[in-house]
Length: 567
Image (cartoon, rainbow, N blue to C red; front, side, top):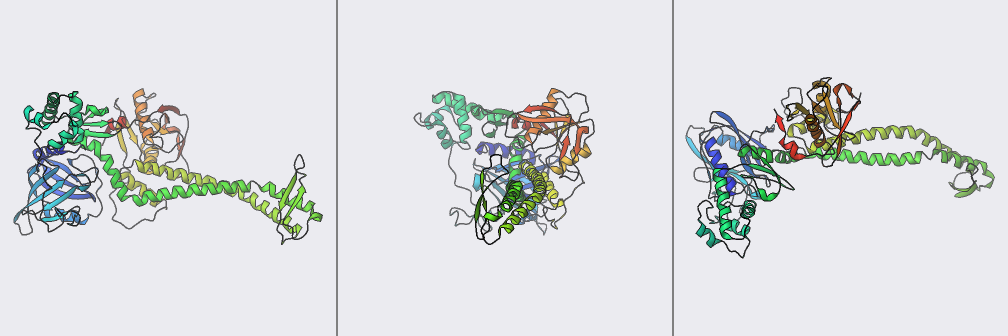
């Protein structure tokens, strides 16, 4: 648990410094567990994100761009009514717990000044956002909890807001060596004791303290404990840790044996760690039906291809039907009406082996022969049709496989464009909804290589088509994963030779945003844009290319995370 009480204290203190006396200008609800406030404070506009997600619950200032829903939900409308235009008077952590309280002053419809309290409880699946009046009567919550679910406290409109039970733990910043030694039992696990005795400590930071102490002695443990607490309080250094599991904390955690990525600020760390993760969750919520449709179409075409291949095998038996018909005619005198089978000598085979031929007992011998000739003609005519259908079906499979890969790494903007593409192509019916603002150009992600070369990445077929055929210039460089679905990657350089750094950076992006992102040694082709050709009448993004070189890349998510992104 990275978002522990110590993290909450730091967040509350940082927000207090930056937002007190700020004005709440606008409120948006991004999903059923996320609220974003636009606040004018300290002479600049800030975006404050409240998340009550069961896994990603947090409170942070963010620089990330979020997609706002067309229609605000009821809870959002309620918050707008009570808080928009309000002034943040105070921000504080409550009881050293994972609770932050906002005191907000605003004017009601009659012009009277009112006080409202907004609490965020950051407690995993029990996280909540609660708005109360000055008497702590609950006005509304983002999640309603009735007394039937929690007998200790009800979290629903009309109830009195009651804080969770206090745990009566010691303040980790106010303990001396003697008190610490009295609390610790050398015969029990130190990490569990640290969590049990001290407010705000999570198992994650407890394990780091033990790792840094590197000793079984309580005195050494106290020294490590005190040093870590002072580092958190006086010299915080936010880090994201990338290893088998990703984590983050106010200081680097060496016990994780992970790659340590320093972040400039506390909230930069949150943006880096959380943005893609909770956005994936929003996409799952908002585009579940789209993703399911794409998967169904992919599966449907796979089944269709299997059936077509079976039909092709049957159709390729056409010559066999012709031989059977001719053998029946050659042996008419041997066939009695009502026979269901006949064994004849196959004079078409090299060794004249006997052949058993199935007959329709109700038909004459000549009619049975004609039936085999009909099968022969039908099969011969079917082969060309089946081959044509196989080609079309393989194109559809490739198309929907590409969409499945694209939606895995899509932002909300990317996902909207995938939906738009499916509607324009006639796969989905266009719904009469409020039209989203658009400048007619798809949004393209831009990165900067370490040698200051801009690199563009198409995240869906609309973007790929625009990137390669409209944005790119003929002499620039184009990258793509070889023989697999993936992003079009454009290097904005017309140099005769790209540097090794730029080549590997563009290849990393092409590999990561492709079907091979979880593989190793992914082949990446690159060539000049002038050698890339659009396939006429094909799906968006499908191209042919030539004069390519190939580089093999092991996709590295940490490298992508560290890459500078341009706006």
